[in-house]
Length: 351
View (cartoon, one colour):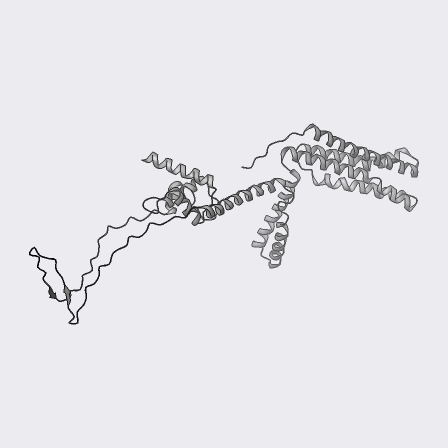
């Protein structure tokens, strides 16, 4: 299981982040002061100006504090909070533009409340990044991915089982659009995928190098069977055979009719059927190893045991590794060597 370890902020990081947070709070406050001054210049009433600030910048500040608090607790913010961070400053901007006397004042009154909106979003984003850095968990990304996966599951079921053909086609297209969003922004998922691909690339590179630098396995030379020379055939259709010399050192030449040799069929005991890879895997209690797929430690031992006893005498380590690579199985050199050692230890214990 992929585990994350919590990291602590250094003093340098704390100082830099604190220095970045101070301007956010300061400019958000200056935006509130500017809105107060703008409304006061129109209505000449401080109470009215304070009410506009409370409904705009004040409410935005409350939502910003809620967002930061939830983020620091490792929880996702509700949709209402995220929507309010943009809606309330927009309302304050429209209010300022509506009460302005000139076009210039309308532009200034509309822009001023946005300072609080940017400050709130900046504080929320900074708090979120701090939590992600320390814990390795991005709650907002997980929330988005969970929503995408839930919608994807619904559309896949609708595309497969809905009675209406048009609805099935719409869900099929929606599924492909949602598939592009799965895992977007999830740093933890990306790290896991990188680790998986790194392991596969290591195994592939190891297999390629082993195939390049492995020593060739030389098969034993086949025994050469001498073929006896056939005797010369005379024109009469008979063969001349010279028998061995007798004790009296006399050589007798006899002529006889050619007798065709009789074929002799050797009698061999029935061969014991070899144990298959499926049977060895079944005894070990693991799935049958497949070429090109990652293997666990037990599956490596199963494959090496099968290859070792495919010949008599059993294969050596180099021969077994060469057969392992030639068959297309994947495994790092260190893991294969460790599995071979486990196999040899087991054979010694059985002996």
